[in-house]
Length: 63
Length: 329
Image (tube, rainbow over all chains, first blue to last red; front, side, top):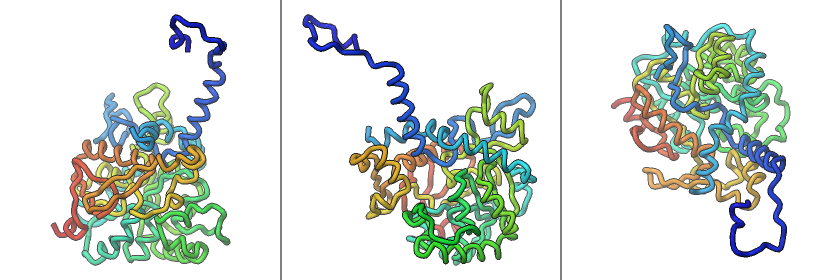
């Protein structure tokens, strides 16, 4: 917040920085809310369709 | 960017948070029942030829009478259905070769197979609220009883492609109905990471990990081309959206969006014109499914033909045709 309060004036009210704990709890709430909107199975970008383990040292998935 | 699209852009991580914990718990419970890998399905004769029809439970399925038309078409290829479409398929006389089940929800999903424990309409309005299977919405208890009989009658002719994350009640129901089960792990995360859950699961049970694209419909499509090796795949009932006129209250994520956004919940819905001159509406999850499907389709070694005649799943590289054109074309 301090970076937005630079200027040739004084602010009458003291503005307190948001506490980390408060931010964490907001993030946690948002994360929990979003998780209720998700799908029934994950999607993993750019990892192919089917992974059958590391055969011959390769980590490629079937496409 | 629209609110719905903004939310959709964050659902890859959110889905992991939603299902990883329960999926892994279910995998541990299901472990003693695992006998066959999904890879064995590729060796089983499931219909003729190099094509498959993948059937989802979207509203176009009954609006376009897709199943009746599929039955009349004389199609002899492979039919892969999602669990939510099983009842509709069997009532229409279409017996899928493979039924796909993914969702780890402990109470809901067994209803798609007929829930032997259901004696009264539940307080959960999940099935009444949506248009996925209208037969289940009318008289839940009677429809459930009829579904149990249908699934029991046809069970031994079908196979289930079951995720290790699936609810144990679904697994028990498949066993009772005589549906042979073939197993796979959902791909939860990047298997190249040292702390990967997918890798840990694979090392524990030896089953391949399948990239599911967020939902069971996309999973069934992946199954058709990446596991069964089909080179032409038609889609029916995979709409990822709601038809014109659907009230918000009858959509899948309505309670959650209402709770999360209050009166602004309507802003989370995305409207899209389709090639049939209709505007369909979707919630953020369905918008995410659509984007993921198109991304995956560009990587797939198969032709994908959208035969839904509805929904919002259009764009490169998907082709559009009627089911009759797909079967006879």
